[in-house]
Image 1: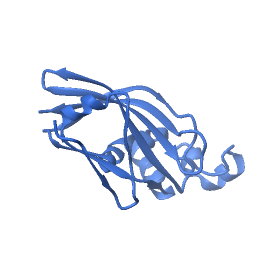
Image 2: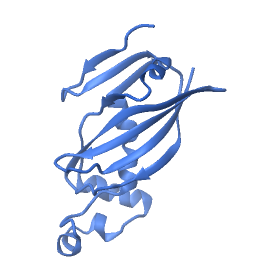
Image 3: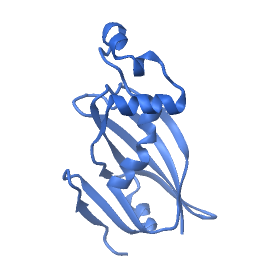
Image 4: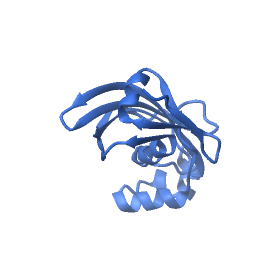
Length: 165
């Protein structure tokens, strides 16, 4: 099997390039890549609130959050952080010889720390499991999302993807 290629993205994060999804099987138990940093602005948080209908003041009312929130500012929705997984993985890992990739689901999602508006986040991806299914393969990634300048991760989850061959 051909050796996986690691390239460097614009912010110098290593990017894993795989010729085949089957190369992920050899990486079980290993961190494979970190994504580029993604900025989360108040405008993005408000747009997410509008689309989802989750307009809780902790997300959209900067003045009240500054006065009443334990964080002193508005924070991103946990589901907004989850919705960035695809973008994060795309910046971290490229699988060349595959058909479609389907988000099959999540396990054990937790949000140990908030993401303050104006912060940057990035995801680390480790291959947790790999199995053959009827339409291709199923890969479970352990995802840890860190928020710049915070000691605790802001999200940890198991993310299941199905790759068609």
